[in-house]
Structure formats: structure tokens, C-alpha cells
Length: 290
Image: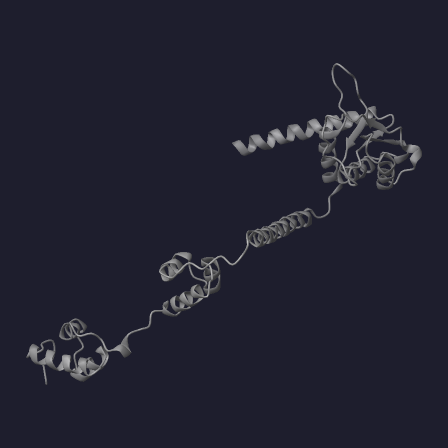
């Protein structure tokens, strides 16, 4: 049937032809080409009420997943396993298989507990690896300390952990106590930077009497590279039987005291440097506020 552009004569006749073609299994595109109808709205009205042929229907992308989920559920899989296996959401799994019988529990409580513990241990390993990566990245970022940087770090460490002069008790001497071998190593490097002769340094161990005293003394002597003659008498802390100590075991080495002989002038320099750091920090803070 012929028709003029923009106007389609004999609508009912066109519909009869379109319906016949649709029932013959043609797609909308094929009907359009056959009847030369390029108005999509008209084309849809001509075949209204006629279902599309099966071959034109697009398959549902989730049909295969749904079928697989039901198959796995019938095999006794849990929602978690199905979700992990198929990579779909738990809500989808529940919707697809909720009419199927719940699988019987196949694990004993002991087995379930063991599986849960292994899972938790795996999480802890991952967390520990993340912690170590963060620490290593920060360590690498420090790089090499300049003499000025080491000087400032040492002053800060000393003012946090070292002996300080008080108005009511004059203590202008350099004495430093800490249990961390790393802190001790930084302190000694700082004293070297300040020109302190190691021959003018004395050490003393402070430790609980119930610990391995001899082992601690050997440990600290090796760490600082000093002769035992430079060590003063070890200070033993009496053990209170009512106190539950947590600093025990082979890694417990007590604290090490570092004292510099005839160090009043050095102490004054350290105290002055500390207050210089405080003043600079305040000035920087004030600039940041304005």
C-alpha cells in the first residue's frame, strides 16, 4: 500500500498488515522496512497488543546467576558462600533461593569455632602487614638527619626524659633515663654531636630485683659499647608481691641511666635551646593563626 509523506491513509489497513507481519514473527524493524513506516510512534500503535516474537526478547542477564544460585543452594551452600562464588549481593541471593529448604548444618560447633578463629587470624595478619607497611613508609620518609635536626630532636628528647633543674633544688647536670634502646641510641648520638667525650659518661641500670639483672647489665653494656668500669652500681627495685607486673620476660631489660660528668654548662645550653624551641613554636603558631 502506498502513502504520502507525513500522512498515512487507511490506518486500519496498515494495522491489519502490521499485525499479520507481527504474528508471522517479524521484529519491529522488519515491519518498519516492509511497510516503509519510519514513524516509531505510529509503528508501535499499529502493533499494540501483539506480543513480540520470542526470538526478539533479550535474555535477563541475571537468569543464569539465579539458576546457578538455586543449584548451589540445593547442594547445601550457605548464603555467604553463594554470594562469594557468584559475586552478587546477599539480597539477590536471598530473593532467588528463599523458597528452597534451608541446608542442614554440616559443621560441629568446634569446627565452626576453628573456622572463625582462622578467619580472625587471617584478618589480624592483614592488619599487621598494613601496620608494618605504614611504619616502614614513615621510616623511609625520614631520610638522613642533618646535624641541626639531630640537635633539635635530642633537645626535645632530653627535656621529655632527662633530669631538670628546679628553683627549689639546683640540678644543673645532664642525666637521662629510658628503657627504649632506640631512644638511648639517639641520645648518645646527640651527645656525640654536642662534643661530649664518652670517657666522661657514666651509666647505671635500673631494674626489678626479680628480673635477669646480670643479663640486663650485659645487654646495656653491649648496646652503648662501654666498658663495665663506666657502669655505676645497678639500682634494684623491690618487688611488691601484691603488684602484678607486666614488664616481664626475656625482653625486659629495665632502664638505663646516662650521666655526663661535670655537665653544668652543658645543661644550661640544653635548657636554653629548649626555650628557644618553645619561643619559635609559639611564633610559628601565631603566624598560622593570623
